[in-house]
Amino acid sequence: MPIPSSHRHVTKEDVEKSVFNWQEWKAVFEHTGLPRTNPILTTKAIYDRFLYTYNVGRTVGERDALMQELRSDGFPLNEILADGTGEVLDLHIGKLGAAYGAFNTRYHRRCNITSAISKIMAFLKPASFIAFDSYARKGINVHTKRPKSHVFDCYADYRAAMESAMGGQVGNEVRAACGIYASALNASMGTALHLRVLDSYFMRIGGRWDPKLAKAA
Image 1 (spheres, rainbow, N blue to C red):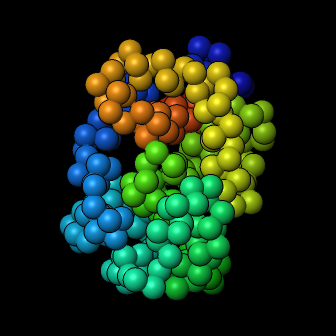
Image 2 (image 1 turned 180 degrees about the vertical axis):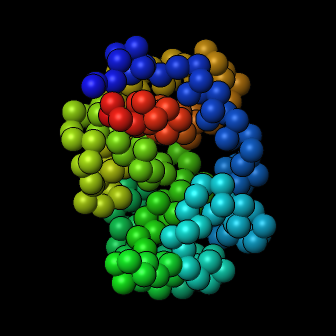
């Protein structure tokens, strides 16, 4: 059963969820210091809350070690963030997973930590990165008429699909909805807010908050 066309539009709820999330993590999103000094990489309580709230802690085995690695002088954090396409990030995700991913006893290998790492990058540079999310993946697949089970080869491909969507009709709806329902934050944050709303929209049509839509996707 296809998703009803009435659900395939950006809504006030999509914006409100994103604004609430932004306000909840304001100190992280709007950090003005060096990326390595962002609270998500320097304050254990905030880092641990992130892992729990975003349901990615289960994929990370060496949690404290990963936080230390991401903020270390030896990790190319600035290069990753400057690239913005996700291609440089992809060069390091596999290594990070091999070193810090939780061990999956069923498959006898370390967990893929793309979701966790992409979410951190989206906090550090919200106007360039969008979090990889399994529900949003289903949503973008619905939007592009791919099978809902389609798996992107890498984070850069996922990000490119999201960027393409932002450049089309759904992006126009996102920008219009932000202007109506979050005018102040829209004026100050612009693209950073738009990407959060796009993410919320695709998570919704991917079934994040409605099991019926998950089955329809």
